[in-house]
Length: 218
Ligand code: 3NM
Image (cartoon, rainbow, N blue to C red; front, side):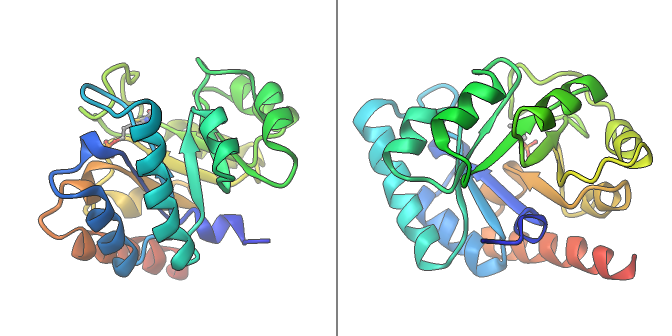
């Protein structure tokens, strides 16, 4: 079993619509730069569906497997089960945490986006393994993102004794990543900071340095 807290440190999310270059090349570079987990999130205008989505998922999963990087699917539980992904990430609008846990089984990673203490408590009760909390900073990547609220909820959950692994998400960059870790998150989830970087490899490396150095200082 992987150390989830460690695996969440440099959490890269992407689908074909987020990339300027070929998604497989972007992922390979990001892995070389030191990402610790990958989430396949095929959403937005022009996103693949059906067999094309399945084929891209399989291709990216194969790359992750070769490098022992956990591969998580966003929202699409049927796809995750069909390709035996390492886990899924769901929002509050999707199926309930309980239903998803029942579908994927006890051994898979289940991440849940939460926006309040109440949502966090329910998610934990129903089988979540980690929380995604955001948007921490303004983001243009998710059309229906809520207003950014900084690291308030991350800090509150930690102050209240919550020990569940947490990743911050939304508008995270090389420059502001350390502040998310400082607030109590175990890792940072990013799309644009890596997927649209001139060098996804260098971007992943710089993010990793700021997150891991910050963790060592504490
Ligand atoms: N979820 P970028 S914000 C996928 O707040 C996603 O739950 C969010 O992309 C949330 O790193 C977001 O480009 C987009 O800002 C993150």
